[in-house]
Length: 413
Image 1 (cartoon, rainbow, N blue to C red):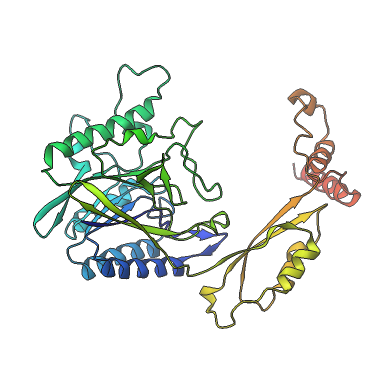
Image 2: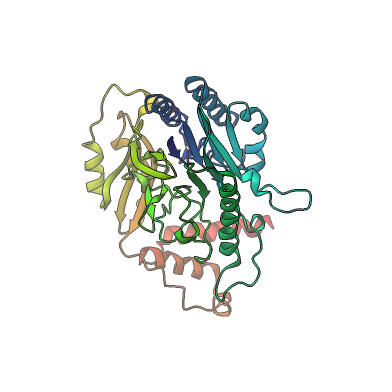
């Protein structure tokens, strides 16, 4: 059986207020063509389909239109979808009865029976080919503490949450093993943070608290042929295990991800084992530019922007997103206006200006206790904060503006 492993689409995402529907549609069109050319039999989507729990109508239409087109182009395609930490479990499962008619299984939350017990049978999805059931899938969505079973007699130092997740995978695996016949592989899906996983701090919502929620690759039993993970945007192995993988996000979701090799993963199974895992690189529809690569003085940055050359035939939705990175010694009045003048007429979208101050000293107030700070006047606190950031006293005109602001605020009271 041939699988395509994807995750972290984040449909509806904006990048510093710029919407990204065009980029997502380019990815979905490419994925649709890839399913056809690769003769895929199963599409796995390992969470974070949408960027937030209340996606726009346009983002939802984009998603469901893709599913309809995928099933139309590849009629025998199995589709398995799990919720990520960005998704609304209930919203994602709402159309499940309709999607089931397209052989699409959607798992938003952990199902329970009338007695409140986890119904593991509904987390185990049979995958079919022309001859019948050919593989089994453990479809485990993003798990919140209330979703996992309680484990009695925890070993010393073992976190109840991670122990509960491991127990849930063990229970679903046991059920799958009781159902499968010889030669049928078992695939596991998960949306979680694994120990040692590299995080994109700019765009991944933290789901690890003090490291206690980082999961070990040991929770995947040897009977699991492949673990298709979502959440981390950088494609990577887990624990140096070739069959436990994050495929990564299909587009860069922040400027921190400009160098990521965005991809989906194709893998094949033969009997109960995985025999081939191949990255399929996703073409980048819109570039993200960081100028310069490292923060530089204002004069150098303006010169680099003036020298920036881009294709003249780009459509507006193809204009690259630009992050400008500047090293300053002190605040620069009119900073944005100077940058906008330097890129005027160029086919580029200014998304972010990142400023760094060479003399930044963030520890200026750390030695002060709350009672000591309470004895200071607001202008003294403001000046200390200014000095901690810019290594100089606030200029007189700025202090005068603060005094006027405070005076007006007092009058309003």
